[in-house]
Image (cartoon, rainbow, N blue to C red; front, side):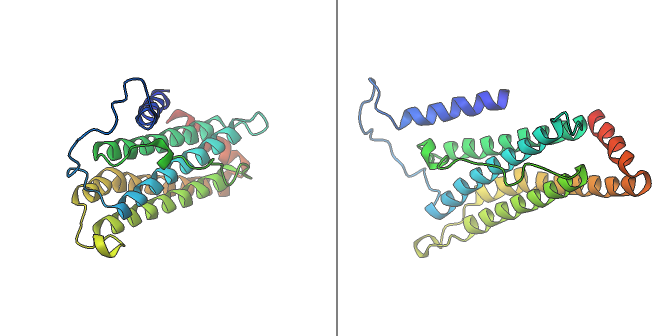
Length: 214
């Protein structure tokens, strides 16, 4: 709830900056030399916000699926709902960073289309965990692409710019968490596969109880 409230406040603040209000004094003479993020890097960051939100929506779909009375896997539901919250938090961090750098001025730069989950039904928990691991791998690759562009911009007029601060931020704040998360997911896939081989359907039930206790 705190994350949703924070996102609402930030989006509202951004939206207000792009509308005419009674206290609008017109264009202000504020030096902009400090706003030094190049456009190609900024475009990649905007795309990454979308990727984090997409991942959040996909995890919400997973949590909703395992919450259904016909499925009834509360442990899996808890795990995926928590994952959705983490992805929303990642999006919020990226938005806050862009605001700090002075590059983001309107929310329309970020939210341009509705986001819908690619999958809404899973045969079992194992398939969902494997999909989650693949999803995290894709997000990690996208972050690596952002880093690559911000280290060496794609456009000829930006070639000499290397955004050291952003690259360090993404590497330390995001990539380490991604790699640890992927390892944990891979471990869960491995454990569940072993439990299902030994205990069949009871294995998933037991694994769900374990997730619920975490």
